[in-house]
Length: 122
Length: 358
Image (cartoon, rainbow over all chains, first blue to last red; front, side, top):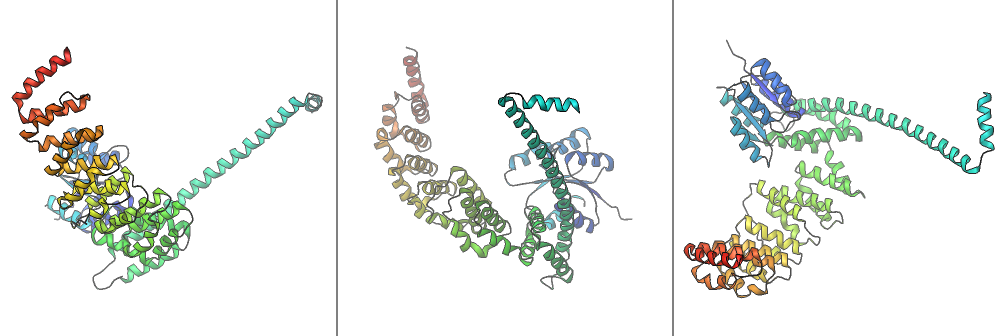
């Protein structure tokens, strides 16, 4: 029986979320979309996903806070891929310190993201 | 009723100032009432517009994502893509909807790269939106021109650089900045050719941003910076000096040394900083010989340079300035002396402390 992996995507850009949902669902994953960090935490607690994709800059709760919550409060080892923008190198380092698994710098190629997701969920 | 008449009657018989105050009060009341209703109408109108905008944005986002995944390798545009293009073209005829389409395309274009990013650029042209962006460049309003250039930059429209170059010395800084970003984003170092004809100053902030864009570009072919180092525009010279530093331009050594005698102090300070970064020892001797003729900032810059290129033979020169009137210079001299000979510095430091506490 094929296992359907759940992925939580925390991203405030609606069209990017839609594009990634379309792409990753085509690959057989179940996408749970959060528009901010607060919603992402709720989804993570409810569904316990196999992978988390999070943008760093988000309203209410940032990507860094999401990573910290997952690692320190929920004590989960779920792989986390962080999306960063140019000039956020320092924040990416902080994300790694908090327990991020991988990062992708925006603008990124959705194909490359799929490759990384597959590698992490192998 | 009678009471109202009585009020009007008493107003009629009151002094003209009272009448004027009453008149003005009524007028202001009417104006406030009209403005309140207008604001309410405006707020409702904006809310309705926002709702319509969100609705169309959702439609266009869905079209865009479908378009991006509907492509195939055999045709430039698949039949499904053609249908979406036709639908979006109809929407784009309306300025309000066109604005939403452009913002939707940009929203995704700024986040993704690779084939999909290029596909969005192609869609922008196919929808005829390029025509509207180019029309913005002919506008009399500077902000419209700046938006037009920005759109062309974000959709990477290279073919129009000659039209964009017309704004090289535009009176508005914002337009010039967008033009410069366009050239550097799309052409990297080649795009910096605008520096050859730039007459207006390039602000410190613009310089930092241009350097950042250059560093994001993977093109490692660096242009010859010598003509810019000789520019009559001081800000261009300072920017070229920053490039010399970031990209280690040893080839420009002679011109950099010549800049030590430039008429502008800022240029001289930046030249010292670049020479220091490149560890060009020839500059040290020139600066040592005319140290006293230079300004305070230049002297500080030179001593900072000496921290990297000092030699034992510099000791005499440094000792001459150990009692300089500027504390900052004195400290820098001691710092270099410390590096030359730590033990000797310790003695000097003890003596200096004595003189300072005396």
